[in-house]
Image 1: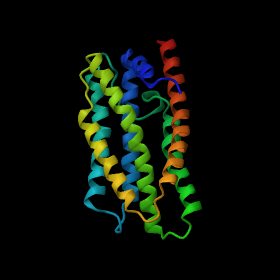
Image 2: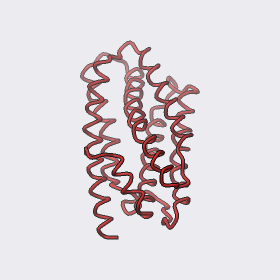
Image 3: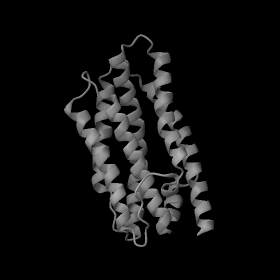
Length: 211
């Protein structure tokens, strides 16, 4: 996979592309909040899960509002293909991750009851997504600071770090959790993200040629 830092430098260099990148991050956070909402049930609807839902939705709002702080950036109201970067690939990454985790858990945890299965899926998928955010967001924040762009991610990074710590602690308490399974799922996520990232690179290259 090509260097994420070089990609972010290219994105930041063009206000219209930068706006679409921020909108794509908003879309991904929105997708995450919807998946958390669908996982809520009478069995799993505690304060931690509700706070996580609220914070993911707020992150989606943060990235949407951050577009307003990019000089000469267009106004992007929705999440259409024209207003994001590689929207289809973003959805394939997120939904594909969810589907593959569920499929793998069905293979290795066939006797688990429905509530426990839903909880374990939520924990694994969220752990993988939060680990990815922990790689991308601090790097993006450092590049924003280097270029003097008035958007900073420290608050979001702190909340995502807290989410990840909570997921790791919750997984450790699960009787069906296996470290080797998490390692396997991490490799799967790497492959899915590599495809998404390749699509992002192609999209940015195309938009720069058209500019």
